Structures are given as C-alpha cells and as structure tokens.
Image 1 (cartoon, rainbow, N blue to C red):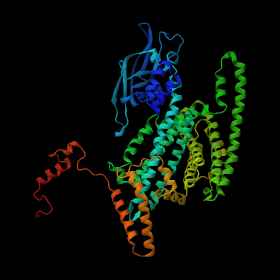
Image 2 (cartoon, rainbow, N blue to C red; image 1 turned 180 degrees about the vertical axis):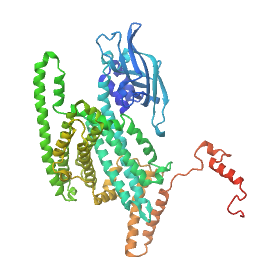
Image 3 (cartoon, one colour; image 1 turned 30 degrees about the horizontal axis):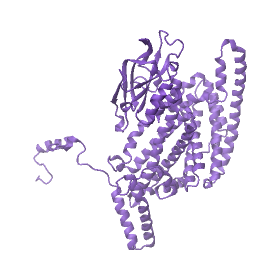
Image 4 (cartoon, rainbow, N blue to C red; image 1 turned 60 degrees about the vertical axis):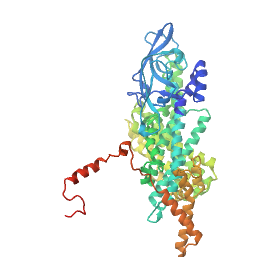
Length: 624
C-alpha cells in the first residue's frame, strides 16, 4: 500500500499530468510496473525530507528545460524489483529558469528503471525476510521537466504531496500486518497451548500462559478494530495524517508484543527454524515494520503530537494565521487575533470544567460498577463511552496547557510521547467500541472488548499522570498543578482505572484456547491448508477440538474413578498421537553446504579429537 500510494500511484492520481497518468497508471494497475518511492538516504533517515545528498539543479539542454540530479538513496522498499521510482529531490534554480512556474525545494521526479544514469538493483537483506529493499543512486542524471511529477508547476510541492499520500498507505499496510499476526497467534498459539502438556496438564491452564494469551487477544482485537476503522476512513477518501501515525506506531508495537508473547508460549518450538515453525519469520520481520515509514520512536515522541496539536485545535490555527497577515491588513489581523484568543481561552476553560465534572462522574460510575456489568452489551458501550469522553476532556485540557511551552514544545519529546500514548489509547478505545457495535453477537466478544477497554483506559490514565508529574517549561509547575486539578481533582480517587482482573483474564484465555465463537472470530482470514497437506497452524487448529474432547473425557474418568470405554480410549489415543506429532520440531543432519561435505567435522569436535589424542586415557572405559 505504501509503495503504491507514494511510489507513485496515488501521487499520480492526485497530482500527475495527463500524459503521466495515461502512461503510468494502467501499467501500475495491472502490475506491469512495480513502484517504489526513493526518499531515505544515508544522512536523511528520520529527517528524510532534509534530502541530504539528493540535489538537483534546473538547467536547459537543447532548448528543453529539466534538472540535473545526483542522489544516494537506501532502504528503498521494492527498489530491487521496481520498474518506476518516485524520487525525492531538493531542487534549486540559481539561474531563475523556472520564471515563476514552480519553485525550489522538495520535488518528486518519475524515473523508469532504464533511465540513463539511474542505478537500481543492489539490495539490502533486512533480517533474512522476504522483503525487497535496496539502494537507488545516480550522478549528474538528466531529468526532463516532463518527468517531474505534476510537471514544472509542481516543482517544490513535494512535501505537501508526500504528507497527504503517506497518510493513507502507512495507516493501512503496516497495521494490517499486525492484525494478521494477531489472528495467527490466537489461532496457532491458542491451539498449541491447549495441545501441549507439561506436568500432565495443558499449558493453557497455567496462569502465566493465560495472562500472555489474554493480553495478546485484547491487543489483537484493538489492532483489528483500529485497522477496520482506518480502512473505512480511507474508503471514505480521507487521509488523516495524525490517525495514520497513531495506527502505524500503536499497531506495529502491539503486533510486536503479540508475537513476542507467542514466542514465549511456544518456547522451544518457536525458536527452532523449519516448516513446523509458524512464528519465527514474523518475530524476525516485525522490527522491519517498527522501523519503516517513520521509526516508531520518532512517530511517538514527535510526529503524532507535533503534527496534530495546532492543526486539530478548533481555534489555534486561525490565531496563528492572523499573526502572519501582511501589514496592510493589520486592523483585520488584530480583530481576528482578539476573537480567536478569547475562543482559545474559552475552549481551555470549558475543557477544564468538563475534565473535572466528567472525572468525578467517571469515578462514581467505576466505583459502583459490577465486575460482570460488561456481559450486557448496552451497558458495556454506555460505560466505556463515558470513560472515553472523560479521557478526551483530560487530553484536551493537557493539549491546551502545552501551548504554554510555545516553540519549546517541539523539543519536549518526552511530554509529546506520553501525550501520544494517551491519544493512541483513546483512538483505539473508540475503534474497539465501534468494532463491537459492528460485530456484536459473537459469544465472548464482550469479554475481550472489556479486557481491551480496561487496558486502554489504564494506559491513557497513566500517560496523563506521567505527563502531569513531569510537565516541562518555565510555567511547568503551574501547568502541572492545573492539569492535576483538572484531570485528577481528588487525587488517587479520580484515577479509578485498573488492569483487567484475573477472572476476566482467565475467561478470555479459555475462549482462545478452546473451541468457541471468539476463537472462530480470530480464525477469520487465516489460511488453512487442504486435508493431507502439512501446515502447522492448520494441523494445530484441526487437532484442538479432538484434544479438548479427550481432556474432558480424561477429567470425567478421574472424577468417576473408572476405566475408559473402548470409544473413550480410542479418542484419548487419537489425541495423544496428535499431541506427539504436533509438538515435534524440525531437525537437520546438516544445515549448510559446508557441513554436507563428507570430510567435514565441526570445529569444536576437531578440538576435542586433538586434545584426546594427546591423552593416554582417551575414553572413560579405558583403564585408569
């Protein structure tokens, strides 16, 4: 999705010239041309738009206007196999040849693979993943103006194009991978934990395993819910940059935790590579998703709040624009500034009041709520919607207080990271409730939704508390006091959110590790191989009901203190055979070509042989 949106399918749809659209779009649509986008360079990573070592100068050759470009790009997704690249360049026009049509700055060029002087093909090897990623380079490459995306009038317009189109692709593709990981872990590891026994008990009955499975299930439903909502937003032809950043950072991080917990549960079977290992590749690949399209550390600590704080405020942007109006419009600028200043102040006071009143109401409703109230879907929605409204008011108040930092805010990344955590939890909370209303009727969905919502509300509360404890700046002490009064007016009493209780955790885990409607929900979209074809997740999933039934029979036999019937014995034997087959891991006589050579001996064994040769007693059975 990202290479198509940026490199350069969506860019062409929105900004390409008619000739560019007619030539490239059909070839991109039918797969004739694979696209990529070249932005990142050796000295331009998170600061990719600085475009260091990616320069072009406007020149005229044989009466044709164009640019001469030199560039060094790396980490370019799909570059080794791409047929066309959208290339980010820093354009300069020292001789004024543009003559007012277009301007200097970030510019995107469209180059096909065989463009003279363009070098594409060398690849990186990101953690052994099947992920085409490589370099794009060129020196003094002539690029006609007809190859500038959008033509000459779009010179210098690249940043605007980049931001709009990245929002869609990044918010869809990378979270989708995490949603897939969530379904795969619930399906595979959920079954494995019921099939695998230790101390004669399925490991699904161990508390530590139950905790890990329940956390993965609720992280999974958050990720699936967020992905569904983001896809709906994109289908509605919207490109919200802040939500896209939240989705990328939050979902890939949760996806990483889901797979890590799956690795912990599957243990030895997850670290031995081979056809039976369904987790190893995902575990190795997830850091790629964390890193690409804006590293998560940068996205969390700078991008989410840095991009959204001003533009998402209902009044602040107009106030700032009034300060930039020309001298000739000073009277109008003063009127606008004064009007917007009062609106900003009123907005802050409203947020302060709502933060207090909603906080008190949330405290009361939480204290008086039954632990099983969530079983009623209407009550589940009503309660959690009110908690999210309270957290929204808390966040809005905190965002208003951030303006006391002025321009220093962009350097206060610890604060922005905490606010990003709070905002991400709130967004995923609304996504999870939206998902519940759409999929309501699945037995057990209330349980996992409750588990997810309790965690998200706790995450948002903790992030806001940490922000209030560490509010920076000259007025940080004042802002901290106001924030604490508004968000937590009665101190600990108005911080009511807690992690899910053990009973709820056990119930969610039980439904993931036994045949259930909730488990079937997570199995949606998971590939299952045809009968007779070895595929570990498929085999685990098909064995689960057999092993579960055998365990129930064994439990009855113990309780009734009797021997099994022939039918019962056959079912237990079938389950035991499946268990024995499914816990096996791949083993190899030789892993490398070198090891396969007839005369090859592993270096450690050579050392042992050499040392034993010098000893008189070479084996234990030799006489002393």
